[in-house]
Amino acid sequence: MELDSLYQQVILDHYKNPAHKALIEPYTVQVHHVNPSCGDEITLNLLVKDGLVDAISWDGVGCSISQASTSIMTELVLGKDVKSAFKILDEFTELMQSKGQGKGDEEVLEDAIAFAGVSKFPARIKCALLGWMAFKDAASQSMVKLGEQ
Amino acid sequence: MLRTSIDAAQLRKDFPIFAKVMRGNNRLIYLDSGATSQKPRSVLDAERYFYENENAAVHRGSHLLAEEANRAYEGAREVVAQFLGAKSDEIIFTKSATESLNALAYSFGNAKADSRFHLNPGDRIVVSEMEHHANLIPWQQLAKRTGAELAWLSVTAEGRLDLSNISEVINEKTKIVALTHQSNVLGTINPINEIAKYVRARSALFILDACQSVPHIPISVQDLEIDFLAFSGHKALGPTGIGVLWAKSELLDEMEPFLFGGSMIESVTMTDATWAPAPRKFEAGVPNMAQAVGLAAALKYLSQIGMAKIAEHDAELTAYALEKFSSLKGIEIIGPKENVDRGAVISFTTEGIHPHDLGQVLDQYGIAVRTGHHCAWPLMKKYGIAGTTRASFYLYNDFADVDALIDGVGNAQKYFKV
Image 1 (cartoon, each protein chain N blue to C red):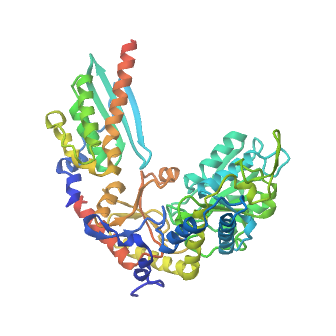
Image 2 (image 1 turned 90 degrees about the vertical axis):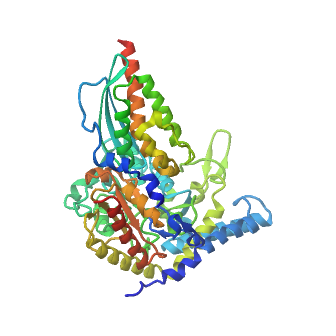
Image 3 (image 1 turned 90 degrees about the horizontal axis):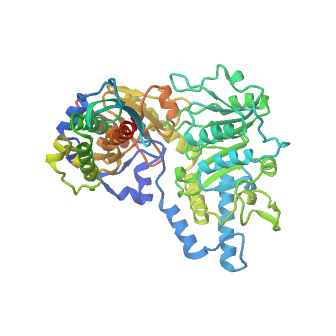
């Protein structure tokens, strides 16, 4: 069924048991993002130390796609330097915009490759990107903030 | 009961879109008429006929086409007036119900200090917690611009307006009361004439957002104790880009226009202008003519079937769906569970399945529902939910569509193992 290309098992697993879903402190920056078309919300705490994603945690409400995507994203970027994390983010964004054509680089995306099917469903791309955009915002703000110190 | 008061399967043949093959090779089961309705061929033909035979800018030009365009456009106004039990110069064409409501808010905001529409700091505007954003934000922003206070009637747990404190909410400072006739989320139909007593007691203006009611139940502005009514064409089988604002003539005469330009003037100098009488005063620019003509065709189609019959059909479908839903596990209906004073809209949450995911599974069966906050974010917050799935029925739906929905929800529960 076409639906299975969207709801890969790894997505359903992360939806049921999301990683890093409980806000922790300390953090460099906290951001709050919403998807105004459906009302999904996410709060994300990000701690950047020595250019590395030292801690990341989140909370929010949303559909399986947004929740699983955020969960997988946190696992991917945790411990990485911000520059590498942004590379993954760019690869993921590109995959989402591929209109069902992109396969994605599994080396870079790891579990996030499971979202390839989402790009066939235009209404769901924003769901998949909600957490990633929150991370992008938080990381950019963190860099500015740390640069200022 | 084999079918409702309307033979919907037969009637669907009038709507070209129902020939479409949906995802999963399914027929279209369209349960999103609360967002927009599908269009019968007669509406599409009316628009095409206008463009092919009568197209010219109305209210200007001395040629044959201008005459015919004028006749078609003003004829459409006449049809809308008859449909609402109104006079034709009380009907203003806008581009949408949203524009109709904003138009009022802007017109009131432009009112001179001695006008009955003028708001002073401390005056009150009353809405309700169940308003669509289109009947909330214009008033919220008008309050901010004028220093008026925004107050609202609450919603009870079962999805009715809480009228227990109505005389405190609609207090002596109240100048405007803007309410929805039927909630687009809950389906609740509000007791307008009962509320009107309190509005009248304060000599306030009563504005009715009738987007969800005009397409579904017989409505006459003669029977409703209101001053203004707004609805959109596209929810009533008509085209997009056409909305209606109805108001009593004496109010329209006193109101300031909100859009300036061609057509709406009586005379113009380089430094000043005077206005044409209503409705022209409120219709600046070349209007959406083909859309008005399309709306007239839509209202004729509805009238031919009969609004009372449509209301009956809606009620039968709603009763059937409410009963079916009550047998499903993990479903909570957000809105009145009793089929009394409610329209053909059922919002619900499904335990363990986000509305967006449910909508996605239903889509796989050709079922189109609405998911999310339905442009009523404060109402969602009130009920402590992120969103709902909403099925809204119309004259082309039947019991089989409800059965498909119920099966679809069951399949989604299996799919997500809840």
